[in-house]
Length: 503
Image 1: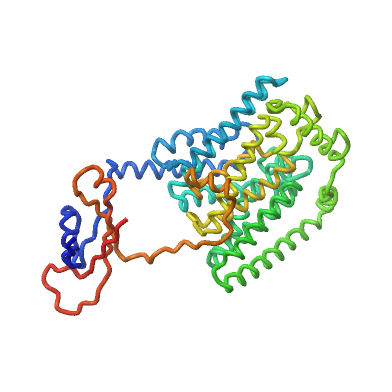
Image 2: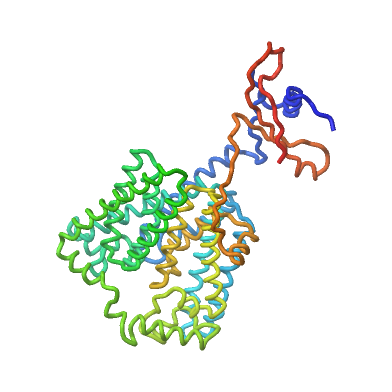
């Protein structure tokens, strides 16, 4: 093998790109695009990204079903793959395949349901939400940082609108707003159920909390103001599940952020900001408790059990009955059959509901999906393989939703499927990663990802050495780094030394 001098290598690299511009400081390769009409494609992408923002912003309005979010999301499920704004890999296919097993068993169980039409409609809605989550995952995987932040920012804007409307409605500002934005004396904003309204606000709450810890003074101040609004709204919803979700999610986020901090200085900042936010939250709640209606409702909702929880016809009695039906019906009862046919209400437990909806197979696969998602997310966090800075807060939000699922059904919550899609997009696993997460468990030893320093200029050249194999694999990175001139430079001699890095 013969070796060429660095200057000669740079001249060869320049001659390989005769149509690219040159400067006095050396070769500056222009970006090469293999897609025709790049300008038109860029315009289409910008319009679609604006449509994505509008879709997730519309999530604040869920007074009736289907909501505007559903109509817009149905369009995105088709449009995003067509315009090339998705990146589907094997891990996403495994994720979709597992969900299709859950949906398929639900449809099979619907055939033997007492009201098959209701069960079939329920599973059809579940199928739409699964497809939406799959497309969200592929969309985020295309550009995790930009696309993930786009969704979270739009979601945060929607949450602030819903929170403001819920708070104003609770205090009847202006007159008549109480009847529009409350349900049974609890703030619901533009949602029809306070128990869905509160969990919708929690991922944006974590996004703003993350902003107070990572942004500059002005950005942290804006995020703190948003946190104050969301804290008041979640409290006024008087949703015990929402409160539990918030406590779990915030605890997971702060704990992991503290452990994964790079320096003690950052840990001190984290503790101080957390203390300040806690004081702010206590002050807001103290002001709210000045209202007699708030104090009375809080004393009722703060109890661990309510009247409808106890007795054979209550929530706990229904869950005990659900266990017996699961054991005696391995193929399931069909969706929406337990509440109203076997018991006055649903079991208020998503895991029991999935076993009732799709039998043993559907219930077990549902648990596998959640276990794999949590394992992959935690594995990526501990190994510091962060495709997006928002991975930590999305993982914490999912943990909160998984815990809340033990006391309420979350199978048709849009927030649940959006968080799942975001996490699978951030992690973007391969099929073997999914299998490893389930078979070997979660890797708990941090393994930092070492990244080399970014060079000033870099160009990737495809060396045409003949044959399809060479065109596919022979990728060479030419890294141009400045060197101090030790002698008078000859005419047309490049002033940068070239290094070849084989990939």
